[in-house]
Image 1 (cartoon, rainbow, N blue to C red):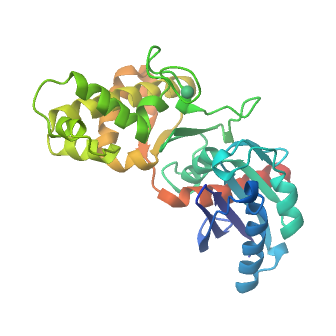
Image 2 (cartoon, rainbow, N blue to C red):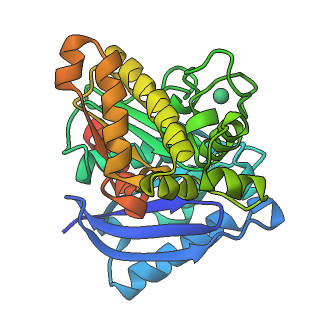
Image 3 (spheres, rainbow, N blue to C red):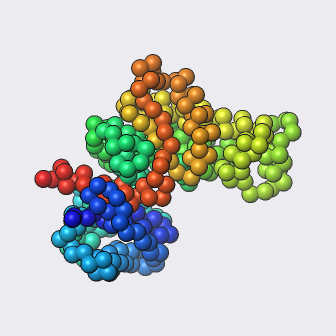
Length: 323
Ligand code: ZN
């Protein structure tokens, strides 16, 4: 039976999985990312561990349809190159596909990590294998991937689906991209903390969260959600502000694309149903009437496996297009 291999390349660990063509994970393992020596050890370490594991499981290279990978940085899926992945020390152009195919003798496919996670959630997670699925990941930053009419949207320079840089507040906080008021500035893990610090300054009533902030305590997005659950009034204002921005972003996405599902994942989405309900309320308010009833917002289901499963999906997608 044919297999696919999925790789989720991150700044601290590289996750691997051997999957069936149907997307069931059969084996999973990970290695530390060795970013020394300008990241030059990364690709050789991936080749070595894949060859080792194929040996262990007695799988020959020609039983593997392909290797798929999600990578940080600017990825050129056609050429199979990556540049500007600073958490890997990959500042110059990396010919990843060429090296991986030479070292494993297996066809290799690559895309950016948010697009690959979108493919994963679409295939085996909340996307129910639909043809129109948008994925938003709320982590350290905000990433996204759009699958429209069955295909990932890349745009002409690979910037399609940069949902984190959708404007939700024209005169808002400055973003890492240089612009102001991007979704990432308020809906990432750091964005939620920024909102909390800012809103607490003007808040005059009693609040445990305000006290924590004023006492110089380390607070995270989780602190804010926990306080909101416990009835803290300031925390409730902060999470409501977050829901407003996310609901607005989702309605803009849905008015443009009318996907079957908008799937929300990443660390901040651990807030769960509370976040989902809050976002849906604003989405309902801002979305076009027929969009409101046809596009559904859901929480991601695959957690950390979205990357390797999506990378496996990338192989299947490319194989289908190729043959
Ligand atoms: Zn931005």
